[in-house]
Length: 122
Figure 1 (spheres, helix red, strand yellow):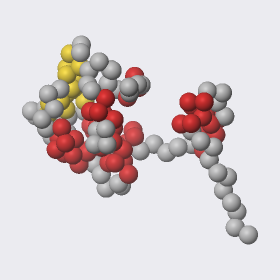
Figure 2: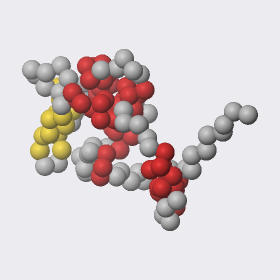
Figure 3: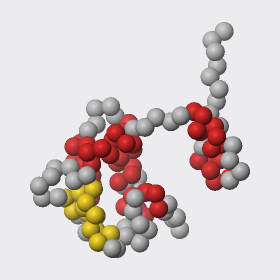
Figure 4: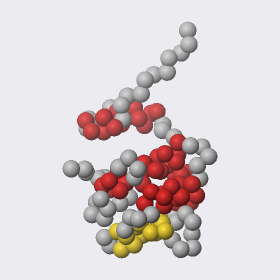
């Protein structure tokens, strides 16, 4: 069983977990696009539409090359990809990782392992 956190942006009831978690899911495509400095919201959207062109809950907007709509249980939601990459390319603050790695919750500690200290050249 896959437990889907609500912060992924998709209510659990709307899409099968493999749509956004499988190796070629929406989140994986976004992560991949963020790794390449020359990626744009247009290239991300193009890849998204290539992989999910036949998915019954995802639709491409008629007057936009980059927006898409997902049919959720409560209705359709249109997503604008203009700032997807910018918001997901955030850097990680070492202090935040260290704070989270010292959590008393084992799950949180597992998500944020202690970062190694920088070794100064000798």
